[in-house]
Length: 321
Ligand SMILES: C[S@@+](CC[C@H](N)C(=O)[O-])C[C@H]1O[C@@H](n2cnc3c(N)ncnc32)[C@H](O)[C@@H]1O
Image (cartoon, rainbow, N blue to C red; front, side, top):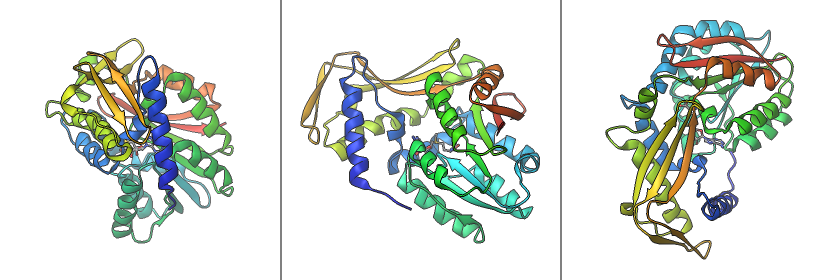
């Protein structure tokens, strides 16, 4: 596992400066995941309102054998997971694939060093014979690493509706780029949250216990810790929205007063007006038609949609044509 902390820190500072200098202020949601953010996200996955994890869990429990039959190759394959997190749901597949004596190596990729370290240790204890090659990289850097890998067939997992964090344009360029590092016949299994009753969706991002709020505020605390900022968390409010046309759930942090925040590392102060938002995250929902159009536009063929019993979530299996 490789990690260059100073480069990562520098990039974090640069991204924050760009986001807070924009006329509509924003922060990149990939920075949610420090050691505290990882733990908060694990709590989110257990919330009664956060249906996404339970849906994907059900899909894997119900369809793990069909998934294996559709992805397995004659010889060995590399099972690459982008944004693996704690691998909670992936372990269902890993256990089944091991029991069925599938010949594969697992390559989890995640920007969070801590979550990857814990995942590796957990896998070693649970599946001692599983070959694991963890990559502490951002998705796009991981794509370049994948490009350097040998011609062993690849099955790429992109679960938990991580795709929802992309705008439609970024999703298209991401999957086109991904397609280029794949060989004909390689597969991609993407977990995607589907459009549904807006109230169900909005509740998932506005839980009663306030964990999603704490998850968003943690990014302000992270900037205090790592960039020497002086955000006062009492002056910020969490505000999620959902637009049923675009399928975009958006999370904002709203400044509740006129305030200045200074960043020691940047030697810069940013002003926030009363009621001014910072856009924190997009969690975009798709229809099945939109999933199919995206696959086609990026040169993939949809092999199968694996759905949960309520039709809330899909794990869509694509093959490079
Ligand atoms: C919402 S969690 C989902 C984890 C897991 N895929 C699941 O379904 O439970 C997103 C994970 O992706 C990682 N991540 C987010 N943005 C990333 C990026 N740009 N590159 C690499 N990893 C990223 C985070 O660190 C986090 O562990």
